Image (cartoon, rainbow, N blue to C red; front, side, top):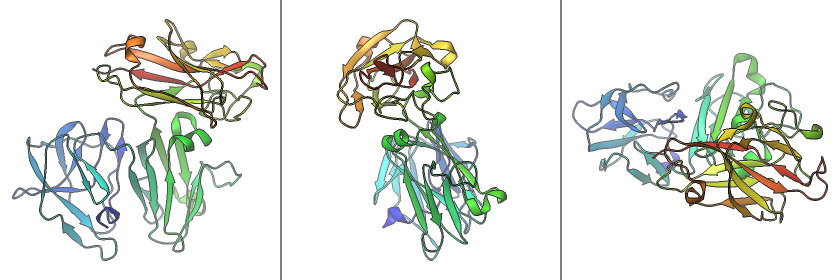
Length: 368
């Protein structure tokens, strides 16, 4: 399958997306790669195995014309030879093309869910610093020797790892999907997941994955990095304070976009109490510098001028959703920043006995 034969490293970050290697079909044009949101390409030399490293910031090069014909160059999985798409594909800026199950975005945001490959090359991971979206899958691919893909920053296995697997001739592919359920089960501050190869950590065989959870940024964790929680009710790193049902604490994710005019911003709260009311609200200020202040069984993160945005009843898994169309009630416009949070009832068995708790905060700065 064409979509299964890509063998290029990918570097992705907020505001920039590196696509797989591309080549313009105009005479004399060199191999190039596209940059999201900037109609420019950067020339990149041909490379034999191993595939080229697309790490570090992408530097703008020559402007791309308004209509560009691209050929998608494919590195065959087994024989490592190159072939081009036939016929070439015409792509307007900001367009997308689905090619045998693989979405190739040109100068536009990536799809909601993508597979990003990380190659093991010698005593290193390529690329070893990724920024992905919620729902994306990271696929580690083995090439030689014996390795592990182990979440954490040390070589000690203690059962707290979000993922751990061998990467060897007997297990040549390791995949982890960083969806909302994974982030809720294994919360980390800033959604940052460091990982190592245990046998070769002293060789610097480490990597990091940062998961962007929508247009907003989570903040105000009940893990000791901010304000001390009430009654010593610490939660897991990257989550809110513990409640009667979930030891990790509740997290608020954002989805949709930050566009005030489109008004498709939405939120999902996870690890709130099933069948108990949950209230989404927005404030103009991050309390205590974003560290929060004790309130009920948790930390209140959003303050200032506060607007209530609606009550939802979580499902049996402790998940509640607020859809698009919040702008009319919220009253924000382009350039405004709002801090969002969910207050939820915890009437029985809460750690501090106040009867309610709160999620982490989520900060969004609105665009046109």
